[in-house]
Image (cartoon, rainbow, N blue to C red; front, top):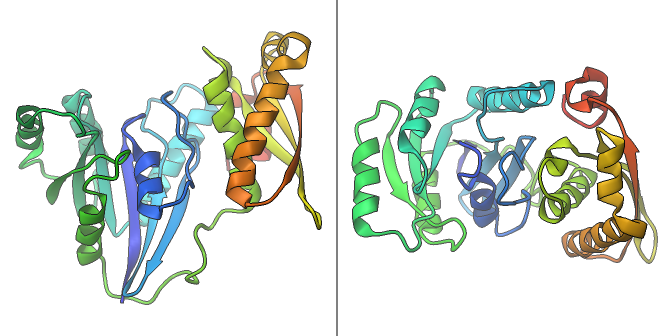
Length: 289
């Protein structure tokens, strides 16, 4: 039996969450085209005959500007300490030198596969150039190319990962998909819709706190607070005559019902907490430990 921890690192928007979801065949990590969508370390547990891989999707690596960012980078740091294997993810359209600088600074103590992502529609010469650029870098054991979105090359990458894992007993029961509670994912699904619906700084200034999660015989009753920093942001989230929050509620409920496979009654409230991103007490309350 092979079993081990495989942690995914990269710049914001490299496609880490999409890759985790592709491995799991299940939506565990929320995805949006905006940077810094992932704020927590999210584990996906993949158990198949002969192996168990515990994947970790980590926040994109950035220079912290707020305490929230510091907590996000602490999640990256903790992921560096317990990995058996690192996946270093690069958006092939991105600046390779920037990724190289980040990966060099991680000072990895475990083997790493460099994964070139978003190769669908890329020219052979661009792929060859990228491969040549990263070949021979001290942190690279092997280079693999995939399209996480199209799931091209993902199965081959998984087989490679399994061969590099240590022999060992599974760490989790085979029916566990993650180590996080359901209400965490409910909050994340609401946050994903905020990223999709609202523009500019709103998604970055927003947190979601699930206050109530009650499973009743016919449905699940959920109440959540949307935390913003200013009254003007509250007005934007609510929208004219509450149109914005109704749309957010409808979209969130549909996604949560898909995730839970049950009917959901969802209530959303908007609360103003000035400067919550720099307040240790608020950050702890919102799950950024």
